[in-house]
Length: 374
Image 1 (tube, rainbow, N blue to C red):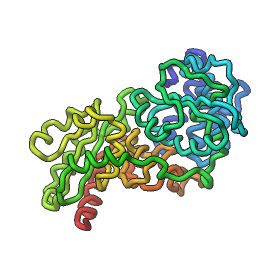
Image 2 (spheres, rainbow, N blue to C red):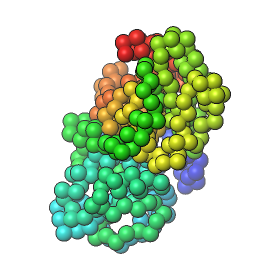
Image 3 (cartoon, helix red, strand yellow):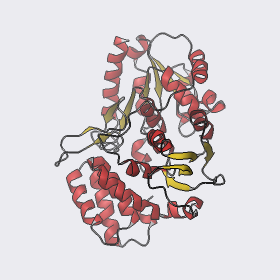
Image 4 (cartoon, rainbow, N blue to C red):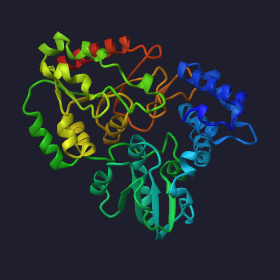
């Protein structure tokens, strides 16, 4: 969602939002904090501003304020135009509803669906039955993990229910904060799928490293989230890593997958995309997350999957990482700490926005050290 998509916002407010977002992404967090604070004091708080400010509150580690602001996002057209919003059933308040059937609408991207799945055991203790509307192409994955729930996909007919809730409302109902968020390890790979990929990878010696570099190009920050593939060449073609027997595997699906064709033809990378797409891609991704020694992935659904599985991965990312990976709870924003959602990630952050060369150099050094120890 872009500020320009909302003609009902005044030019003054639009400029303030743009300044706040720019300050946040540039690392001028104290300035961004003041701008967001000014905007949320408005009597008639626009849902776009509330949604944007909520993300900044999570970056600050102010969870209570974030969940309250996030509720206002439900007034955005993205939500109000969906059939789910027109259902007559009441919203669940987090109370005991042991005789009721709850419909959970997974209203955001796959990465957030994976992140929020940690709350499902808590939900299932409080309701009689659960139905989930999940991201396109993922119903089979969730059915294997939630066999007693009705699972269908967004844009399928809405199932019957007594109560409903949007998935990103669950943290507010749980009163999630840095101290009590359910930890990772709540998603596991399929043993059968893992056996297939164990055979597919073969008995190669040396470190097995999976790679992705391109996220969804429709993402509003894809221009600085995804890494131009040429930046990865110095790692893939590094002679020291080659001599150490490091094996690279491309897990890049759809967008950007053709970038690797040349190096795959040379035998520098094993491109797994065709085999993954011929199976269940999400199930395959989970199995490979277990079978590989390390993932190097941009901020994407795969990063959230690895985090949810509590498997090690390296995340080359923004100058100011998303709240999923790092928070800035100190008053002056000078002492960032790891975000509480996952724990197995290692961040390699840009020193300046979109400047990937130092990030690649740091990862190359770290991978040489890692391969020497394997």
